[in-house]
Amino acid sequence: MITTHVLDTARGQPGRGIAVELDHHDGTSWSRVGAGTTDDDGRLRTLTPQGPVAPGMYRIRFATGDYLGAAAFFPMVEIQFAVADGAQHYHVPLLLSPFGYSTYRGS
Image 1 (tube, rainbow, N blue to C red):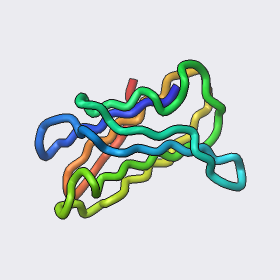
Image 2 (image 1 turned 90 degrees about the vertical axis):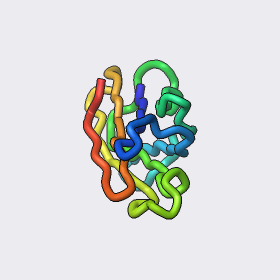
Image 3 (image 1 turned 180 degrees about the horizontal axis):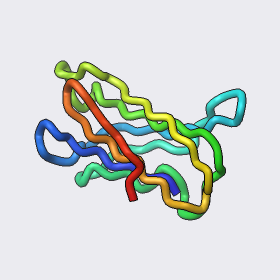
Image 4 (image 1 turned 180 degrees about the vertical axis):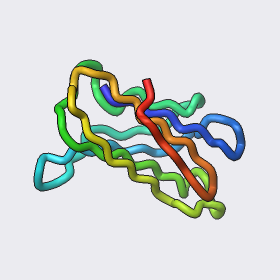
């Protein structure tokens, strides 16, 4: 399962209402796995169904420009990551501010 969480570090609150897309790379091209919008807690738990996902390369994209508006230096944030064991839970948080972002593998 792959989930995400956006925290607005400039405002000290969850990143609510941010559109998110998740794609899987099959070796030649990207295909959509899931999409959705972060909830009031900044979380999106429905990018993939419960249970294992296919191992391989994934990318998760956040429409940060719509959320941050004119202050957005990064209007889209894209994070690519590798899934080695599809039975594990992969949580990909985004710490966001108007002029920067960071991420890590969460739990």
